[in-house]
Image 1 (cartoon, helix red, strand yellow):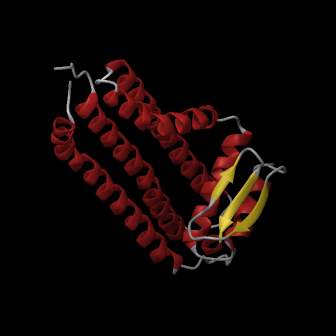
Image 2 (cartoon, rainbow, N blue to C red; image 1 turned 90 degrees about the vertical axis):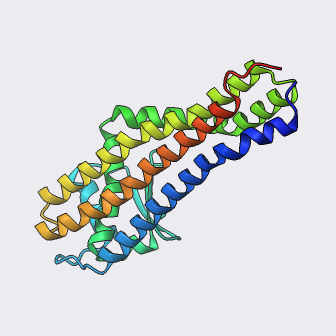
Length: 236
């Protein structure tokens, strides 16, 4: 039977994977924040706010069942397909910056995806509850398997449960990149931003997209760590 000493011997080296994931996520978060701050000083020539841009985009796409509201927080912008509500953070809603308009347009991109039944968006919505349950149960299952004389079946179920979080992250990537693509296309067609402003908005959205890539990579590293620690180990 594996003892606690053996467990901790295997725990320490792989913790470097967790650290690497945290560093990658931290760098991505710092980059998107610094990029947003930079272009938040870049006022749009049209002088429209993030809220006005969102309302215009929704009207231009004949989306009349989505509301727009301001919420507290910084970069807490989101679109909820369940209640058809587009929420813009304080840093976005009333700002006339290119960064704010870009972020608002990105969230509108999700509303457009919803209206057009974009398949990856539907898949992501279906995966959310399963991924949440899997993430919650994975570590208890793995620990229970270790306690029960290294029950490999239970451990493997726990690892598979955690892998659902990675699947969710991977499905999220095309959804987010497509929303940004739609946003930039609508802004260009609507002549809401000049060419140099569009280039700035593209940089903001690219930086935001990197946070999702970083999240997927960090989740993969965590999954790899679990596999290295607990995968396919036979009892002594």
